[in-house]
Image (cartoon, rainbow, N blue to C red; front, side, top):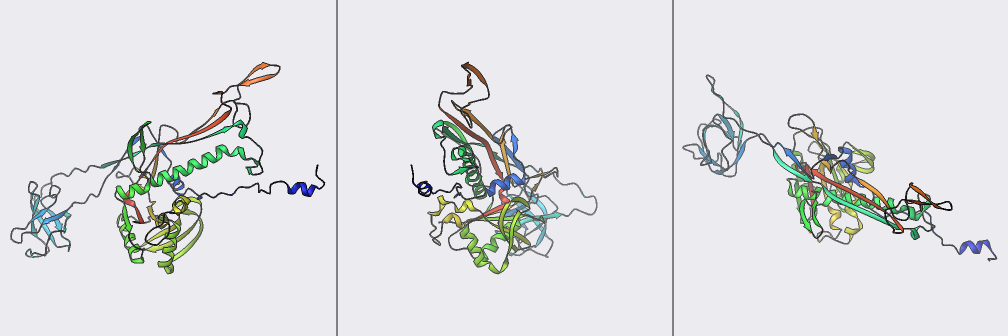
Length: 436
């Protein structure tokens, strides 16, 4: 018995009921992919994606033009046809009079000039077909070119998370979870940890089919792997980023597509954001705490905008790149966390279908079978929130009832599974990161 209620109260732990989060915050990449387009259900874990490339015809000059005969050696001559107007690096034009596919040569008659010189169609130039120039009278049709798509693929990959709680874990606590005791957080926190796994999966997974001790498993192609291996614009830096280097990189991104109204975003770590504010300070404007960026609805994010080469780019801090697990891995270039210096560029403009029938999201999610997420509780002797393992009851004796469980273990389990994958239209994306 205490002589003072005040003294008695001071003996209690001085703890806040609320627990603050130290994780990295919003799953920006997961939000983006979900908002751009819903995940597509697939009956096959390997999803083939076809793309129709540039319909233009061009080939690298491997043997300079013979100034007497007009014969030019190219790396591949099979798509050139008689009557084509061909241009070199300096837009000097000639007309194809003969194609030799066996020797990979084309013969050109001069159009822009009266005679060929050694500066025309030199080694390293691209021989580019501009258009056909047929005879005015009695012209004939051309041989057919067959256009076929290139096929790539995405893999869905199984990712799981689980949480188990014993009945004796359900104790009272000062710290609270949604107004209840802390033990009630076991499934909610497992779900948050699972969401963090998916963010890392979509960002850093390297596509492959593997075999482990437990059998075969797939890994999907994340954004970083797709950019580096699937035709994205990639720049590994060996020194600090400069304005000239950054602008040159953006020019490469702009050249990928001639479409107007493109929505380009740049997700970056704090070190990269600070560097850009230093080298581009006079050209960046603060766009505020927005609910949209890149034309896509997201939770409020601090966004800055930079305009260059006729395009506006939204700069957004991607907290994942500043995660605690990366902080101790310092770059030899500037002494700051290496991952925090990374900048991921994404063109969020939908990619149109070649036949005009629709479009593909540049960050398209897929999931195997019907459900993107499968989650269930597995009760043992106890249930989700109480000692009742299920609503199925059977009278035992003296008013006591038994409920249906799935095991004799004095606990309950929560399991999640997502057999999901990501396909990135990598040629619309770019990455600047430190090489070391």
